Length: 253
Ligand code: NAD
Image (tube, rainbow, N blue to C red; front, side, top):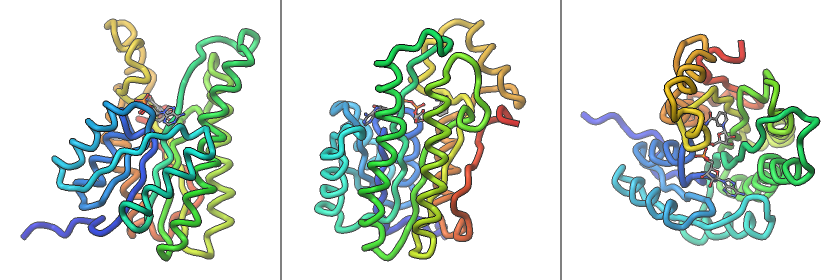
């Protein structure tokens, strides 16, 4: 007998679902029976994600939105409710990595762009998703932080700060809504094979350097992050809130 799928009848929203970790997680939720709203900026990649969700047996919808703009975030939640009638879970995963330089070389534009998407974006998503989740009787949110939100490395001070902030937002929201049945957790990936670090992986030397950063000796796969996100949203994690779950090959030890 086929095992009962874990997210049948559930509606999940995934930001940055047009590639990498977000797309893999959208597909994993669909495999478990969920309806998935994929949020991102690129329409063609969004359509591809929806096709993959449908192939996996779920219902999918692409909503074009920039998470750093409040009107877009409000509209993304409204479209979710319009199309699927409710919201149970959200994976706030959209993010950017821009710097590879010491803080003395960082420009104001870089600071503003990273914070707008990685911090303001997560804050706006929490603001607009939580009321919808409350209306469906509770649920959960997972925010994508990073190993760099726990254990900073030199050369990415603003990104590090943005991911520390993601963890701060996660803990604050978890405390504010714990009594109302909304669990909020963060995931801290190590180096994962996605478009974000494609250029570093192009030559054998860069790839070896990324592999050796993790005590487990390899970079991770987006599906390994997806599995942890599904766990945090599942009833198995019913007593888990405000935590940061590292899925990082040991890099933050
Ligand atoms: P990715 O570049 O493939 O995915 C990032 C996604 O976010 C893309 O779909 C992009 O379109 C979307 N996005 C960016 N800005 C947006 C905006 N303003 N509005 C809406 N969508 C936006 O890379 P990824 O590795 O899958 O990244 C996903 C998350 O994981 C990010 O938050 C990243 O910081 C984090 N992360 C990645 C790694 C890694 O090694 N890949 C490690 C730790 C944390």
